Image: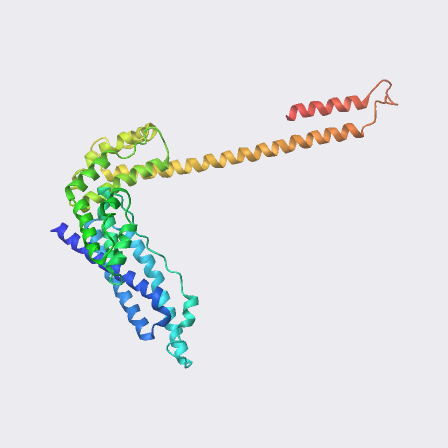
Length: 359
């Protein structure tokens, strides 16, 4: 039941993403010609889409706590650009209307002031089964269910988002309105195979990159992100990953470098099995420690470079000082007070001794 509910929620979320995208297209193409009523209706609809999305996304995250952080951020980021744009347009249209301007003229001043809205790039798909569901969900929301597009345009978007094996699958299908559905069904029939996708994620989970010979925060974070990506994908496919934590820990630990593994063995609980959350929490702290250590090392290196520059400058000053002394001291002259004493020679010897001590 939970799987069915989650699937329905994701379909609703995709619809809301597509509706928000249509608002963006309206602003891009029709803002300068829209009436106040059209702008206000669009603003109200956008507000509803946002509240519905927040509710549905929260429900999705209750079923899958790690699902959709990127999707939520993208939706909210676009909303916080679209809504102010509409509010500014409505206000300026009303101001122009109050001055007696015509409906055609009243919004033209907005065009030059219109905010540049962020484009949502289409994902690319090359034929990796583990990437299919993410690609298909996004393509469906932005293109397939976008009522502003006809099938020919959808087909062009489809071809432009494919490469390698996936593109070869449909490259000889002529771009026509009727053939779009044929091409899309061909891709769905080839790649939307749940058992193949599950096996692919499990295989990649076992083959996550090893960090055994590299003690660095970037390598550790890559390991953590890879494991989490495949676990989330398997969870969305209905696999009981919550019961696999002991197995996943045994996959992760051998991938660690020796220093990190030793520290984990020192901190790991000895009276019970550790949880996957505890392992990831430790690795997160380890990443922070390695980043701080690397930053300190860079700072020390820079200080050494600066010190060497200062020392070279000081020794150069010593040499210039010695040259000036030698140039300005007159040739040997015996002291008139102490017969046979050569003060110039004594001075030069003293300068050399000082330089030797300082150096």
